[in-house]
Length: 223
Image (cartoon, rainbow, N blue to C red):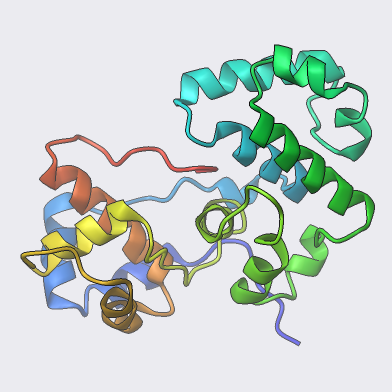
């Protein structure tokens, strides 16, 4: 049984991607990207998913304020079944949590209580697709959210979030396309970047940001 490591060899990833002439030109232009080593930090899937739910569709500052209120209300920095259960929906509403997000949080922690959320130890033995299939049934959790977790918290090396607009814009700029590539076309284009599609994604985000005149790519969920 394969055990997946958290993190990957950036030197090997860089050398591999330099084989793609179009991408290599941008890599030289942008310089070497050093990933934020979030995978070296402790990882709590339930807490990470709860925070991802709270951050959805909000600016980082607004979301951080709401999270701080929730943490104060439950008396714990750990967002789990046993801590979120300390407060009712009225209290969460007072913290600024929307009705849909309250339903999502309740669904998440109910699944945790039923032991339906894979532990980090179990995730280490699961393929990325298996992790996605296990987590997307949670209300409010989509494929993109899990892909960000896989990339930035679990350090999986071969993730290409083809539905991400920034990724598609980066690919469009990379290959000088008139329109955004389709999801299928982008997946096919990215096949040559495996097994380091996560590192390629970092460059695609940076290429998109460069094209829009930004100094750096926008922060992503959980990065």
